[in-house]
Structures are given as C-alpha cells and as structure tokens.
Length: 429
Ligand SMILES: *Cc1c(COP(=O)(O)O)cnc(C)c1O
Image (cartoon, rainbow, N blue to C red; front, side, top):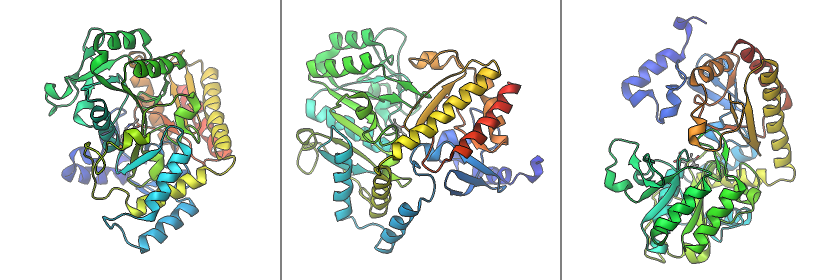
C-alpha cells in the first residue's frame, strides 16, 4: 500500500491536532519504533482490524486485560445486561460484593478489597495505605518496575548505591520523590543495605513480582524471599503490584506461582476484562485503616462501576473454568518456543520466558535480571522486527520494554502463522 492509500495516516494527522501526540497514552504513538500508529476499527477474538481493514493477530490485548480475547460471548452478554440496568449509581451494588468475593477466593493473601478505576489509582492508594498503617514515609521501588504515573513513583535512581531518586517527569518537584528509594531489581545485597540504613523509616517495598514493564523479568526466588523477610523483620509492608500479572500468569496470580504472601496486592488490567477497573487488597487488619473505617482517605465517583464490575466478574468466572490456564500456558509456550526455534535457525541471539498468558523475549543471548541489562537490547533491530511483523499482520507491543500477551482466543493456527511470519523477518535481520 502506498502512503496516500493508508487511512491510518489522515487519522493520525487529525488526532495530532486535538490530542497531544495524537494518543491518550504515550506508548501508542509508536515513538520507539517509528511509523504511523494503527487506528483500530474493531476487534474480535484474537484479532483486530485497523483503518485499512487489515487484520492483525493481537499480542497486546489492550496491554493485558483481554485474556479471553475480544468480545467473548459470556462477557459481552454480562456487559450488555448490566448496561440496561444503568451505567452508574454512586451507591453500592450486590455485584461489587460478588467481585470482591471472587478476588478474595482467587488471591491467597487478600481478605478485603477496595475497587478503583485504574492501576495508577490502585498503586497510589496502596502506598498511602502502607504509609498510613506504618506511620512511616520511605517507600522502596525498583528501577524498571512501573506502578502507574503517581508523582512519588515517577522516579529513577541516582548514581550511587541505595539512593533516593530523581523525578523522571517534568512537573514532579524533587521534594515529592525525596522519600522514594530506588534500587536495582533482583539485587539482594542492595536491598539489605537499604534496610540496614533506612529500615526504621521504610513504610513499604513495592515491586512487580514478574516485571512486565521492562519486557519480562522475573524476581528471582531468593530476591522475592529476602524482600518478604526484610519487610517482616523491619515491620515494613511488602506490596506486590500485580496489575499486569494478576489473573494473567496463573489463577492465583504471581503470588500463587511464587508462593510468597505480600501484605498488600495491587490489581488491574485482567480484573476489569477491558473496562476501567482496578483494585487493591490486603488483610482485614490493614484494609480497615481505610476510610470510612479508618484515617486513610480514599474515594472514587465511578469506583465499583456496575458495568465494569459485570465485565470483570464475567472475565474472572471464565478464566476459573477447569483447564483454562493449562491450555493458555500451552499456547504461550508454543509461541515462545516457536519464536526461539526460528531465531536459532536465523542465527540470532534470542532469549525468552513466559508464565501463563504473559511472555517476553529479548534479542540477547541471556535473560536480563534487571533494567540496566534490559537496556542492552538493540533498539534499531527491534524496530525492524516490529515493523516486519506488523507488515505481516502480527501486532506486538511497539516498544521493546513491554511484555506480550496471549489470550484464550488465540489458536495453534494463529501461533503457527505468527512463528512463520517471525521466521521471514528474522531471516532479514
Ligand atoms: C499497567 C500497569 C499499571 C498502571 O495501570 P493503569 O491502569 O495504566 O493506570 C501499574 N502497574 C503495573 C505493573 C502495570 O502493568
């Protein structure tokens, strides 16, 4: 297709007149890979179609939520029925109880849950809760983990060991991040040092148990175990940000896979099934610090929205059916193994990992353990890989620092088509 025929182009032009960068979330703009973003017209199952009616096999699934694929019949029916009963009331509903009960049944560490509208909101509220419960200020986060765009979390480490961070966004005053300690992921010694130095003032340690915002990097078993021990010994709270991994890597999420019990869990993405819904949960003792019972304030006009809760509940019910995760995991493994085989044939460095319906791969000869190692990937080569796949109807994340997602709607045929497309692209890299 010539540029003059591409219907995504005039849409992007128009969007850029009225929306900063033409997008409502930066990574959609294709800045990391170049070219014109695809404007989606509709989606069904494992596919979406762009403004040119080109079909793409979708491996981002709205960046995680669409674990059943698009327009799953049971979810669609639940949403349509809920919509007929009204969009929002600002008063409690039975469905919020049902969703809370379902989350508690699936998340080993949670006794009570509060529903919110986005992962950012959930993460920000979890940190306020941790500070409120402990009466301490310092929060520990890790380079490369993303917990939403709240001010105190838009921060990167300084040059030395265990340092307080610097803002990564304009508009965040340094004072706002002065209580945020930024450490290297999977670095046990540095975490120990941080607790030695600041332990009495650490309110919480927040991490992605499988980091999905620096591609795909697991917390090592030793690291996760030591984080749990240090928090317990120092009366700090361990927060697992499972916005991406929750109900995505397994029925009981990453905490189930790893056998680690966090104090507070942050959730989003899959629990909304594609609607704006997120949550945070913990033990009864911790959650009862929240308003209206306790002194930690948190609220939301649309929180527990009746249509979003219907969508989330139907999604969680579907993924709870026997065998769902086994077959999802098998499909994901077929994909990453297929890609690795194709890369080996082309003589390319390639390392991959996956859990449940989440995967990552690197154009490196080993799996990175932390952000600095992730940065070693050749971005130019990744850009050519991305566009090669895109031209062949395969849509992966338009940035190499992102995980990928397989849904229950992807078939073996979709996976094999993807691997065949990748083999063609690999041969030219
Ligand atoms: C997506 C994500 C968030 C932010 O959620 P939003 O709904 O985009 O605000 C927070 N933490 C993690 C781990 C995420 O993947």
